[in-house]
Image (cartoon, rainbow, N blue to C red; front, side):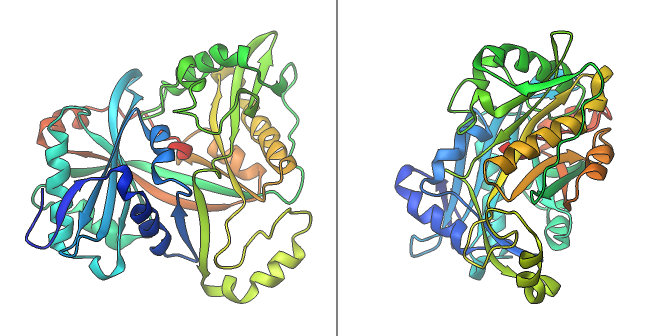
Length: 372
């Protein structure tokens, strides 16, 4: 696979250091410029993205890796039934090579060749909503690139943990930490609720207990809601800092000027809310949120309990992803102060899956932020 200027191949363990350097040296722009890093191993987080994972790299004439992008395949719910779908993620291109059509076209051709293995009929990907240049580029049609069809908008809630957040659960509902014996009931709760949404992960009990797919997530990291002995809701506090990190590289606008003042007036955090450039954000994911329809009022209480647990463990920030139009977004966002980030969710497909993607029902999507 390749062009006159670039060669494309699947990454191997021998590429680990170069891949980590590419992530470390190429920040995502914004009011807070971040690098999304994978120390000490690029490949340690691969399995949580999907049962099958491949990273494609582009090399320039010198043999140096100047770009990467990943393809993962996992079981998700599509129109209420389990379906194996792919995910395109982690696109990074070294600054001197960005925007070069030879590089982008080479990635498109290489991924189309990989697609021929039949591992997934079509793919999901997300693009930050404010990145208009990237959205225009990938929404356009050009040779070998899959068609991008917009499915919805993911709202990421970044919630500072400077005070207790516990919300009183509805009458008759009890919240408690889970144990390993609860995992089958947690999986059952996740499956019967997440099947209502497009692209939600199809979590099985064996996957919840498998370190490959839930690295860093222990049974006691789940909080469950029970009513009359029935498990009707769940959420997890998932610390991925041992293998994935968000590192601040710079600030823009008012944050660059007022960051020290904001940190000074926010009490009780184990680390600054806005760390100095070069330092990690001390954050944790809130994941595996599911609540039975008759108990949906418990969603804010579950989130509040998870925020309290994250604060108790010393985190400064928690992130939760919900799609716009989801019934829990408004009550959760209204209950907890946050900063929101928007990303557009796309179905990406080549002609062989055009009919299947066009026939998708209008169920709202619900991708799991913690495994993106």
